[in-house]
Image 1 (spheres, one colour):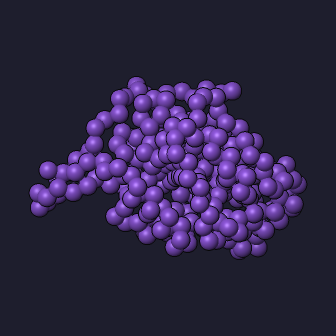
Image 2 (cartoon, rainbow, N blue to C red):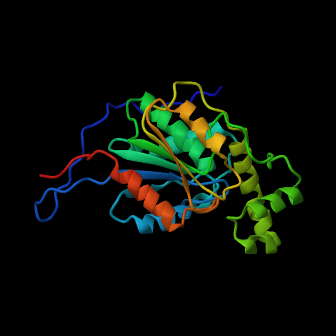
Image 3 (cartoon, one colour):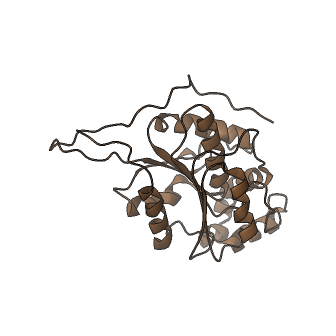
Length: 264
C-alpha cells in the first residue's frame, strides 16, 4: 500500500488562536471547515454552504487537480496521488481548530486526511462524511468506471448532479468525460489505508433518497471511528449540498465543537 509523505516537519498542535477585534472585545475564533467535493465536482459545489454559514466557520474549498480552477493541470486516477496533493493543500489550515467535510468521493479523502493529520499530532476537531457508505461496506450500485463510454455517461446522467446541458454538447462531453471517469475510478477502487481508525468525532449523513447509500453501509462507519460516530438521515437525494436541511445540519455540527479560544 502506498505510504504518504510528510509535507513538512510535524508540528505539535498549537494552542487556540486569538484575534483582537477593533473594539477590543473578546470574541470566539471560528473553526476552519475544509471541504472536499464529489466525483466530477469542483470546489464551487460548496458555494451554497459557504454562503449559508458566513459566520459559523472559515470555509476552505479544496480543489482537486484537473478540476474547476485547476482544470489545466493533469488529472490523476490514483487515490494516493490525489491524497498527496490534498495534504499539501490542507497543511496550512491544520494548525488551528478545523473540521474536514467530504461529499461522496470527497468523504473518503476527508476520512483519510483526518487519520493522516491525527498521526502527525494535528487532529481535526471532527470529520463529516456525506453521501458515502463506510470504507468496507458493500456498494449499493455496480461500478461505473469500467463501463463503455455511452453506458458510463448514461449512468452518470441518471445519478443526477451533472448539468443536463453537458450531455447535449459533444465538446463538453469530450472535456468532462475523462474527469468523471478518473474520479469514479478513484472512488470505486478506494480501500482504507493502513493504520488505526479515526480517533476524533465522526459525523455521517446522507439523503433519504440517495441511491448510493443504505443503512448498513452508513453503519459501517462505526467500525472505522474510535471516537463518537453519529449517523443521521436528511431529506434529499445524493446531491444535497444546497439543501437548507444540510446547511442546518452542518451548522449544528459546528455548534457542538468546543470553543477554540477567545480574544482579550
